[in-house]
Length: 552
Ligand code: ADP
Image (cartoon, rainbow, N blue to C red; front, top):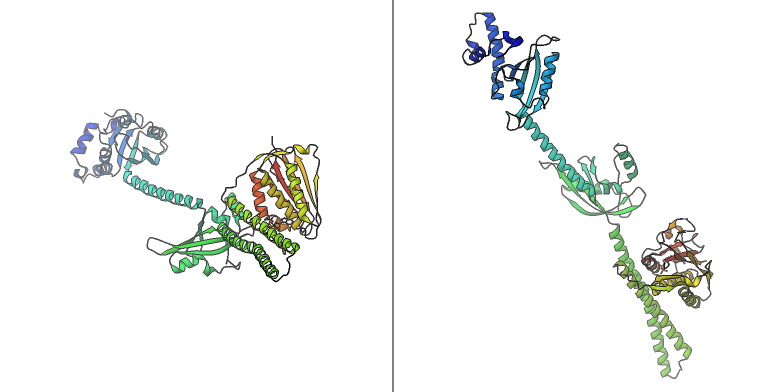
């Protein structure tokens, strides 16, 4: 039973009787006061929202309309609202009601998710206003809680949000996969506007650094790609894979282009493209995937080089050997006619065969070494070995072969030179030294001194003489420097000297395969050492540095 300030309101029993017996429409319409009162109570009773009038001081339910009874079965007039909804304090509703009751200020547009809170067992979402019943600014005697059930709308909103979230998750997942692809991917819409691209694509962009800087500032800058034909001329737009795919309305594949990077390097790429379509099948854009095929091109180049070197370098000594054999046959024919064959002629023929056979041998073992290195099957037979003895042996052998060249062996600042011992494969160290010394002689066609210096690096610290770049050597090491006064090495060739089959352009007329330095460096690395070259330029001599770690 309502008590206190609201006791003037119709008693509870009468109201209940009203609800069930006296329908407002049956009141006498002639009495305008009564008509208005009936209308007012009818509005409240039949309002689509649940309405509960609460006593402002006790927060007891004074009146609950039909919709309130439907929404909250079990709600009882005259009941404390806190008993009806025991969870209201912890969900903030009690505080809101108390504030409105205390201040007379309404609170509108409030929302509450009350899944599982009595009387709700399933999903439930309420939207409500708390309105003071009284003049603005006055402390109200009663407050009105107007509640509408927004569960359906809320569930729908959740469904929409969930599917948007799923779509976004899916898109993000796809984007993450595209981002991680090693293939460059660029997606454009139908008018060519860039939609998205991945990391690999950015790496090949002409303005990569500017795009990265803009990204770091949170700004957006479009990457640009420079497409060239394989011959280096600009590729017309109609030739580009994205254009072709849109034109053909079908995937196109297998196009080779060059893409010019920011550093000016032209990277060979293999490109494929496909049109993108919407659900109705209309073409909305294109996706282009392209891939750096430098490695493939390099293999192709090596194969070509191998065939040309092998055919040229193998054929030459074979031709000489064949020539010598023919010469011998001619001499033998003459012997049949009584012309004597001198020991000198025989000696010269034998020597020719021997030299060319040695050359063939060297070439075959270089080719074998190269394929072993490529297959990762280079094996060293390392034993503790003194260095200086090995160097002397190779220098002596070269001195004999060098003819005009003055080959000198210098050992600098080594008080205990005999003690330079390392864990080396002596045969392989000899091979490196032999290659370096024979190159020094070979690439000094006008003669000149070839100096060999042996030094000890107690801590393994060593820098290039000309550029000061540090070279990495683990612990104490021996440094062997071989300097010649020959044709030198052009600046641009220095970087590529140790590549397979590479020969500098100033080697015209000097035989070679471009394999020796590649093998020598691999052998030095296999010993945990290093090998590099320095030269002040073409025509000004060169120095090759070999570093080998010492024992202990
Ligand atoms: P090859 O001598 O058979 O060509 P290498 O691998 O030994 O092969 O050498 C590769 C290239 O390095 C040579 O073709 C030459 O251009 C350059 N080179 C090597 N040694 C010297 C040197 N001492 N002086 C000048 N250039 C050299």
